[in-house]
Length: 84
Image (tube, rainbow, N blue to C red; front, side, top):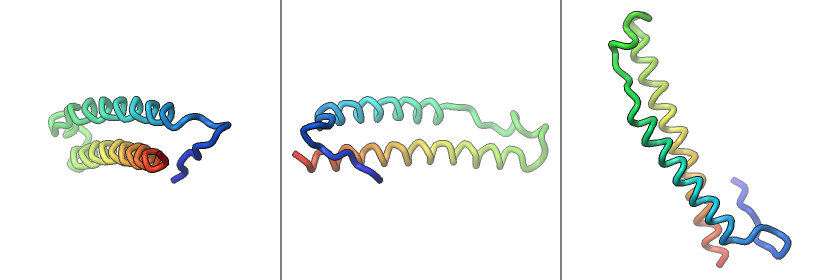
C-alpha cells in the first residue's frame, strides 16, 4: 500500500492524519449501519432454497470489505505516526 511521503512541498502529517481519522470515523459508521441491516430468511425464500445463504454470504463479504478498508486506513495512520 502506498503511504504519503511527508516533505516540505506536500501535505503535512497532521493534516493527513486528521483526514484519515475522519475517514476511519465514516467507515466505522458504515460498518455499524451494515451490521444493523436485516438479513433474514423470510426476505429471500421466494427466490429459491439457496437465496438466503447467498444473501448472507454477500452481507458478510460487505462487512469484510469495510473491515479491510478500515485496516488499510489504520495502517496508513500508523505509518504516518512513525514519521514523527
